[in-house]
Image (cartoon, rainbow, N blue to C red; front, top):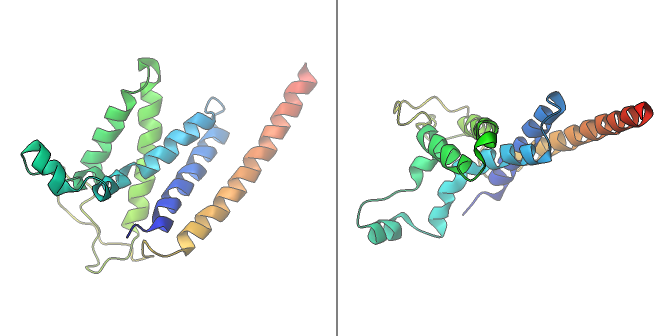
Amino acid sequence: MIAVTDVLTHVIVGYVIGTLLSIRYERLRRAHVTLVMVGALSPDFTKIDLVLPDEFVGYLLGIPFSWAPLHVLGGTIVVTLFGSLLFAPEYRRDIIVLVAIGAASHHVLDLALMTPTGYSYAVFWPLTEYRLPSGGLYMSSDRWPALVSGLCAVLVWAVERRLSVRRDARSASLD
C-alpha cells in the first residue's frame, strides 16, 4: 500500500522550499514553486510500478526491466534532464536546478526513514552501492511528518502573503 502521508510530506516540503526560494529570489514565481514540488515527488515515480509492473514492461520490451532506479541519484538525474526537454531551451537551466532541489529534498527526507536494517537505500547509485546509516527518525506511514511539514507550509504561506501585500503596497505608492 502507498504511504499517502509520505507522498504528501514530500510535496509539502517541496512547496515550503520553493516558496522560500521565491521569497529570496523575486524572479521566481508560483510556477517555479510547482517545479520544486514536482522534483520533490519525482523519485517516487517508481510507484508507476503499481500501474505498469516491472514484469509486464519487461515482457513488452523483451528484456529485464525495473522502475527502482528512478528512486536513486542516477534516476533522479535522468528524470530531471528528460523532464527539462519538455520546456524551451532558455528555461531548461532553471528547471533543472529547481527540480533537482526538490528531488534532493526527497532523498534527504528518505535518508531519515526508519529501516529494519538500520541502513538507507543506495541513494548515490550508480556512483556507489554504499548505503548510509538511516536516520531512524520516522516511518513512511507516520502522520506526524506530514503534520509538521503542513504547519511549516502554512507559516511560509502566511509570510509570503504578507510580504506580497507589502510589495504591492510599496509599488502602488510609487505609481
